[in-house]
Amino acid sequence: MQAGKILAVGKTSDLRAQYEAREELDLSDFVVMPGFVDCHTHPVFARTREEEFHLRCAGADYMEIAAKGGGILNSAKMLREIPESALSDTVSRHLSGFLEHGTTSIEAKSGYGLSTESEVKSLRALTQASAAHPLTVSRTFLGAHEVPEEYRDRREDYVDLVINEMLPAVEGLCESCDVFAEPKVFDRQQSRRILTAAKERGLGLRVHADEIEPMAVAELAVELGADSADHLPRISLAGQEALAGSDTCAVLLPGTSFYLGKRVHAPARAMIEKGCAVALASDFNPGSCYTQSMPLIMTLACVLLHMSPEECVHACTINPAASLHIDDQVGSLHPGKSADLVVLDLPSYRALGYSFGQNPVVLTIKAGQPVFANMREREPDLFTNQEQNLPNFEG
Ligand code: NIG
Ligand code: FE
Image 1 (cartoon, rainbow, N blue to C red):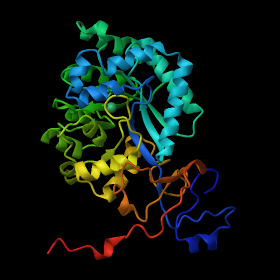
Image 2 (image 1 turned 90 degrees about the horizontal axis):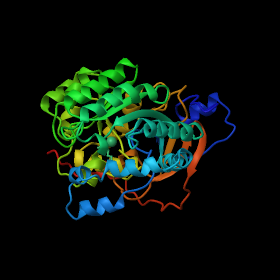
Image 3 (image 1 turned 60 degrees about the horizontal axis):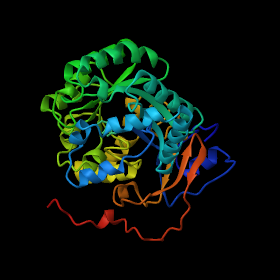
Image 4 (image 1 turned 90 degrees about the vertical axis):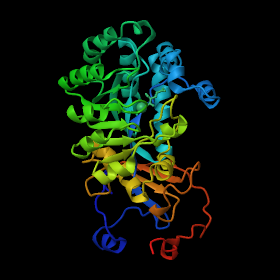
């Protein structure tokens, strides 16, 4: 690498013959792969919501808690109280958490402000935190994350506020716009209005789609040329076909269905077989998925979505990078791209997803610089690498 960029890729012997390294790092016992690209996160929040987690574990439903003023509204209350500089410090700590789990680029949403003032505060705090941080951050305005208390009886007025006041106010503070499209939150027509207005202002579109109740949102995302349709446990067959014939990426968030205790998961296999571009993301947020670990998300993708390690690699690197239009800079190890690497304490990428609840990251490198290191001692020869002597299940 040179000046933070990958200079060449190839066999060690070929590279040694061509270049003289100023410094060499022997990582031959580790997996070295592109830093993870997490293309769906909500890191702009003030405080956690563990009490709701325990309410859900005791049987309460996520949407029920939301309807009673908990959930996103609870986060909005806490966000409205915190000063911008303190919020920026909190966000900065969240950004560092991503590096610890091998993620070198993220998409980050606002959405706990739910007023023009607090949405602007959220995006400014995010902008300030990311400007001083090595992580690459693509910012998304999510003013339509929930309908605030004071608009519950006049929801269309809130949609008007998002379109006429918030969208102009967040200009220059975000690259994309997202909507939580759900029958009980923003219905299809309201979602369409907000997304169309955002598109007219030149923003990229990302949509919380067909998560809890089906509403043909994947189809809407394709129709509007969105960069991604996210969640998708309730996607229709027509929605899968629409995605397959489009440039809209299916962003799957198995951590959320798991953490909410849902038994319906996105039909990843069907979507991959139809030819959809599939990405995986953490959905890191204080309510429905409190993790920043893409390795954990890969375990859930293997177990719950039946994805292979090869599919997980693509879904955590180049596919999400393409959905954010940063695939010319990150997402794969190619000369000229940013030297964003994650070094994993695994014998082969085939071991991705196998261990869980443990952080396999030993080193994260962003633009050629080490930004996180965890140099624990490794047990030699623990992994058997049984690829060659697997029983034959086919005959
Ligand atoms: O993607 N569902 C909407 N947004 C988040 C949850 C936000 C929250 O509960 O704080 C999600 O799951
Ligand atoms: Fe989300």
